[in-house]
Image 1 (cartoon, rainbow, N blue to C red):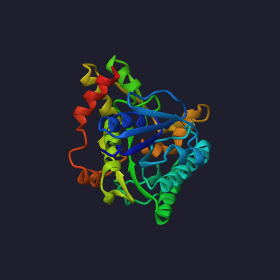
Image 2: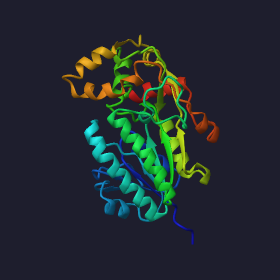
Image 3: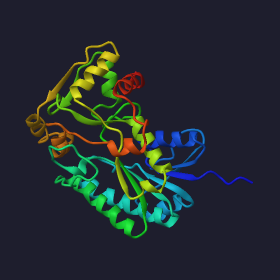
Image 4: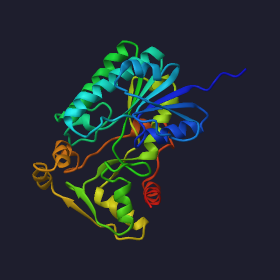
Length: 311
């Protein structure tokens, strides 16, 4: 009698979680997705609705899990909500992973590094000063402390998303790409001709799956998931070229973003991380590429796929 396939539990079904679930299920794993609603993900994927900040619920939802994936974001993009919800989500999943003896694979972003002119590596100082950045700094410290208590974890940090699955909140999300493919002008922020660290969503999904299925050497480690360094304006031009369009863009300078932030809540939040857009924002992904060679998608192929998916 064969043993059942390992159970992988994903918290969050947004830009990454749903695609990750389908990928893992296609590999013959048992997959459960925990989300706020019971909206289905796809054939063979179990969906459980509940509050991930409730430790008792998180523990129940992950009983028997081999791997748990943290792909959640707070409910709104404000510093106040991040400070309240993100630590609660993290504590519930740490406790659940330790109770199940599961590996916790965490999707993270690059906010924690803060302002630096250097190319960021996994060992760069976590010097963020903004509210959301400090939340990520505290999370990194919490994982390190939990490891000393027995937690098995791995972190995959990604840049700004584009490509299939990228949502409306992404500057280079599917909505913007679809507009460029129709000939619309894209609106950018900051120094749009400076190179920026982007992540192609299918690479993020594949990277998290790789961390979930890898050997013990990835535990206690942080990896930068595959990064594509390209200027936002150049990326728009490439989207346009792939669609047979001019690929036009206009960038709002930093001072204008700050002025708009006085009256527009979203721009108010963007000013906190404007340093990512008003100068080169460089990230080294060599550690991941060395551990998982051949996984990353080349820029040209990613652009073509992004345009095709957006259409």
